[in-house]
Image (cartoon, rainbow, N blue to C red; front, side, top):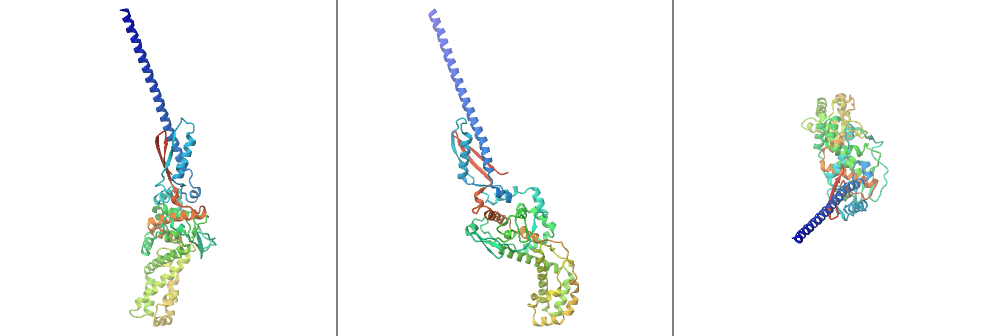
Length: 448
């Protein structure tokens, strides 16, 4: 009996030892697992923390001249370079830290290209503060040029000089422009309609404020034939004119835009002329006097158009001197008399011989009729050259306008700093993934 009792006690002691050992092993496993989990959580936490730091480090390398000149934040790079850069950051940051096994990095910058018009537009908006928008909308920050046309430009392999401005001659430069040479014309009817709708300098300012950041951007950063925004030299002197016309020739852009301003002013002056009963009556009297009969109607049209054109020539001289011209003129704002019109080639070349002879015979009588129109006083109210061009810019297709703004930024960055500058190689955000201890971590960030 006693031997059996001892054997039972020994069995119980053995079972307790086994149980104790099992508990100890289980506890050790739990502790080891907890340490492993804590280690993985620590590694995960460190990778996520470092990853956020690395995205900021990449974004912090934005191009300084691009930022200083245009307020646009973007950095130069590509997938491979950013991957290599992140791997360098990983190696440096994780050295001797919990034995992290680095598997590499993979960057994918697709969708963040500055050359994407939507990305450029957002970057442009972020660079324009509320104060800047207010200042520009109320006409601040621009200076009058000391000369209208002409500058001694130095040529290069990418552009040449002719007349007073540069022409881009490098086909690669032209082919890589964001607009890709996209055309787009503005109808005279659309320009005149927009001018009538805006009506005044205050109307223009309101339209600029409401139009969007790209119009503010044009005012803040780009020059034109009459005023300039900054002392930094641009490849094109006539940048507003480029936005409107889009030619690779500076002179051609100025020529076309001046013609468009002339046509717009001429149409508006015809409206002003026909709204003035005294001028209309004077034209009727003169036409009937020198071309009796049914052909008098044709003479009326010739005189009216010639008078509007002569008035427009005066307007153009004032606009190019940064003076103001009203959209629709009243009698007191009309600057030319009918006498000068009748002496002009514009009228005489369209009159038959009999009408010319009668015009010469009755000139004294006509001069007496014209006396009212010669008594004019010029009021300095209306729109200047900038505002006439802004009417055209506001009337443009928005997509074409944005792409030509992008053209100018790329052209000037090439001209001022980097001959190989291309917006498609600059990015406004970053995206990459890293491999650490067999796990993948993804990070993405952009300029705010």
